[in-house]
Image 1 (cartoon, rainbow, N blue to C red):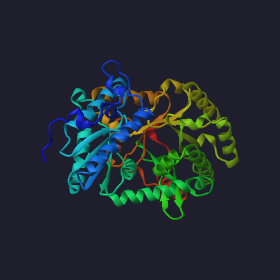
Image 2 (cartoon, rainbow, N blue to C red; image 1 turned 180 degrees about the vertical axis):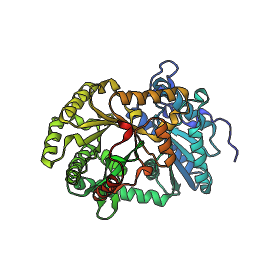
Image 3 (cartoon, rainbow, N blue to C red; image 1 turned 135 degrees about the vertical axis):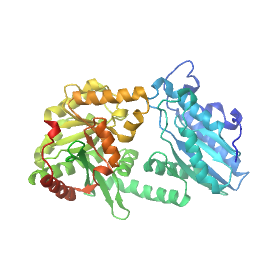
Length: 464
């Protein structure tokens, strides 16, 4: 079906519901778009529900598509933060240009679009793939720069008699499921969405009791040295064995904890399991470091370093074998307090890994004087930098700065042998991912690491 000409403002809904004032004013004030206020968000939601109601009166079956895009990033070769509002606005205009007959576009937030479709349901999957292409197509003004958003789509089927509230809830559940699957995912099958809602509700209700009981188990992801091929560390991954729903993975567990406001409780519950593993591995003669994911906000807890030191002593585990993989979050402490907490952990002996360095907001100058264990980024993100000269130079500078700070450069998501070769060429030190070994329970990992230690070299000759 051919696309129609650019949609008019009337087809896009009220201006105030389509674009927030921060986006409309970008020509005069080049700032990042502020989050929608509650009144604006309610107005946008009401406009979408009204559009759904009108469309349902003209068609027996509708598709409600929720699209979420990644905010254009600042820094290393990406779009400057001041350009982000214009990029987001142009993405919306690009979508409007490619609407088909019976479609209307609505903005629900700075990064989320809704499309109401009165078209053939059998074309849902094909149309969603085309929408993903339109979302990821570079805007002409920024052609050649790294602005491709990591988009996901959630689709709900709206049939005769379906309330707009239920349709929105199903579409939101589909979007959540797509987000869990990763960038480029589309979840549109209604039974899948209903099952996702039911299971997620059950998990949310049972999570508090799971954190207060020994329901969490520890799985370990091996970290591979790119020069020697030896396993040099492990990364802790929690698993929740639900009595009726089976195992819940680390990503879903973290999402549930974040949604219920219990992320700090989850992280603190994981630390004793990590210390127990360090003690058991030391008894077997293994001295591999163990990295535990931790949000920067957890460090704001009073006397965190002292309590961690006492927990290490009580568990009989060496603190210098524990690595805290820090994630920057909006609830984190201010830079000065974070720097103080990092120095306190350094004094205890715990080493720090800065995770998701491409999203780390605080300057690396705050890390000076700290014995960093490493800087970490995703292998896919690193590959994206190579496509643009300025980003490629910035990636090389990041590697040099990381080495100057005394840490290793670690890449996650290395899933193929080609990834390992390429990362080694880019002077990365360590890698994690499918190509480095599968996820194993703590006892399995201990046996696997002992076997490799007996067969392989114990010293990396390139490190001398």
